[in-house]
Image 1 (cartoon, one colour):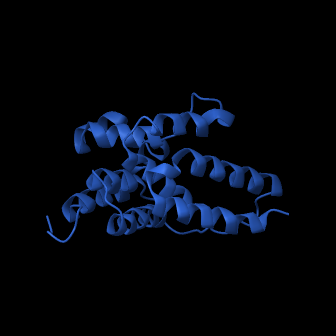
Image 2: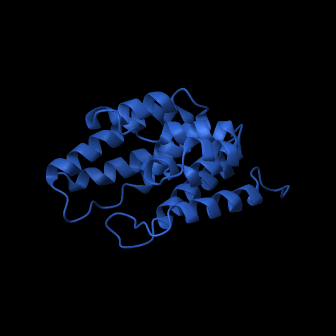
Amino acid sequence: MNKSLSWSQEEYIRAYYFAAKAHRGQVFSGTGLPFLIHISFVSMEIIAVLAVEKVNHPDLAVQCALLHDVIEDTDISYQTIKETFGIKVANGVDALSKRDEVKKAQRLSDSLNRIQDQPHEVWMVKLADRISNLPPPPHHWTQTKITVYWKSSTEVYEALKGASPYLGERLLQKIDNYSNYIK
């Protein structure tokens, strides 16, 4: 491990490679770009916070950032994540995953409840994920969808802001900017 870093570059590379293979062929919604760009943005937010805040388990935060959509959006299972990265990472990724068996209107609150049972590093990943998902909305979104996404972003902020002042402030700024798209 690089003594100037609080997280392992080797573990980052291992998780990044795993995520790249898992998400191969997927596109980041509204951009036409490979989905890996979203994974890169989320992990960048986590790496940025590691430079300014003390985090107890930085590798957990980095690995969960890179893998946060693997269970939800690919055919990779919880068990595979557990065998490859350990139970803490698998539990974090699982909590960050919305469950198909939960009614759509309740999926976010279900996930937030499960995230709140995890270490704060997992909370930070959800904050970083939502920061990454708040660029200007796609042109094809309706005002209703934009408003619902803005409200759900506020719900994420309220539930998880205590995990990181830095990421909480970043998300609050993004939510404020996003409100400009609500007419």
